[in-house]
Length: 326
View 1: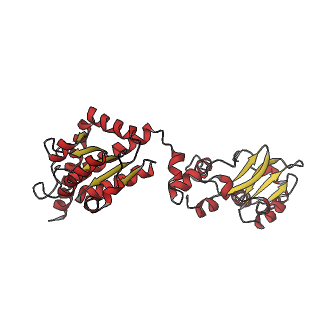
View 2: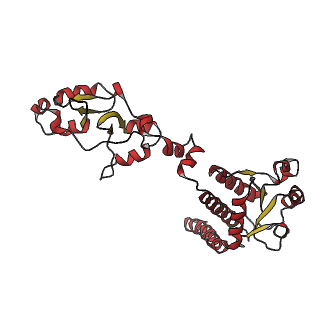
View 3: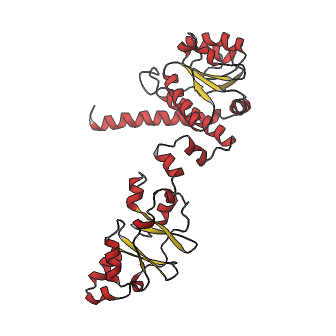
């Protein structure tokens, strides 16, 4: 295959799978609603089982559902036949997935599932299959054309199955009122968790780490204070300790570039930014980062955190970067 043929073949596979996913939309019907309502009303857990490539796909779907707060477990059919059926209780629902509806290991589970008394939901492409006929609730997926070797290699069907599982998971989570704050609870150690839970107060510099001068200080005095602290800016407060504004190393560079040597003796208040600050230390860092973004799409290096007119901290890009959010 030359380079043109390589690209064309890859595009053909993608087009084939897109067609499969598009055909899935037509199956979002009353049967799908019945599946959703059955799971929504379930007092136990959702036990998902599938063999082969469907098993790999629905392990991922199980993980997605669990991350959305849904009581979901994956049971490998072969392990189920050797004792793991003990995971299932009468109040549970078993969601069995098989493209052709004849997976031997899955079908062999059904007599025990019926004896236990759990409901059986089937996802398959074949309405006349053994799995479909034995199910209490059935969701028929579209019959799709695999992308390689005359419909032999699971490609399009696994993509469709994954999208179907995602659609089911999202609908269920939305019905249960699952929010971003809930999502953070189940992802405390990852980037998503930090974005949804880390507040400005958690990482901002406080107290002795903040460079502060009074309003009557000179630029020179402000620069000396700035150099003594690790942020690259100095905050100005009035005689009552109320926040007035901020003078940054960027302001200093602009001042020096003008060539006015006497400017260092000027009152620093002449050159400060009085508008830039954050007003809530409990603001999420992710939201604060948007406050730090300029019209040009760049970021301010630091922002004071001011509450009730008083300076309580400094949030810097360096701190945000150390927290893994930049």
